Image (cartoon, rainbow, N blue to C red; front, side, top):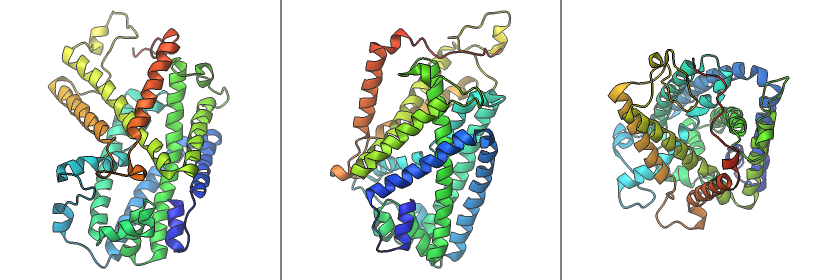
Length: 385
């Protein structure tokens, strides 16, 4: 995005692939330094980022609405559908395009992986996830509607210099504001928020590595499970995630398509994990094998026994919500493997199915060859009672 902004401001500039990798590493460096040397102020920093997020939203929204001299009609915004991928039906095209909305809500579960560092996590985290989804859903929908109103020609935005780089919204911002400097300022707000997101993603992903390492579920789990005594952060887990991320950046030097294919695995992998856990929860809900805390009085709690926490939807409504979640997850998982258009060439093919399958094969092989000898399930350090 930074290179696309440079191309927007300098029409003769054509970003090289290695430059994208350098910028990618620079952002990772910011995330690494923040998660290590500024870990103690990370909660306060995240609160500041939330304020910046909301303020940036209104700055962009108000600017686009008031500076755009030409807007399309409400009829075009809400009733016109374009099947740009050449799919047999508009319905199928909508499902294929669903991934854009899915990616926009990426990381809603980040707070879950920080649970061990949050007071009252059994109540705070569910409310955090719901409020985050509600807030970003409202803000995202409002921004989508405004951008659609100020986008007079979609094809022109897609065929522009920034559109060819994958960021047509930059050209839309310039057309709407009528000012290159004004559009650049708005784009910089989004870039800053993306860098902040990288900081949060490194924090939460390192906690996943730490927790799974503590459970003996990863290679070199003894190292992954270590926590620094002075700062109480999983430094080795942070280093592993940062190293893997920087290594992935090398792929971009050889092929931007291959790099995007690796990144796209995140959607299919995340939703595979969502569907599995939600399906198991749905199964136990239907069977009624999840006990209520009141039933635990005078009994011994076992590690593999499921007990309701203080935040849950009981009865039939909980079952219906779980069933909806499983169905939605399956739809997203299936369409995460679809290319953007019919009969794509190698440059536009979606190879995430190959990547996801390879990861699954490696995980199964690792489990049967080694992990099953040491992995006995999640480590329970504190009982809920």
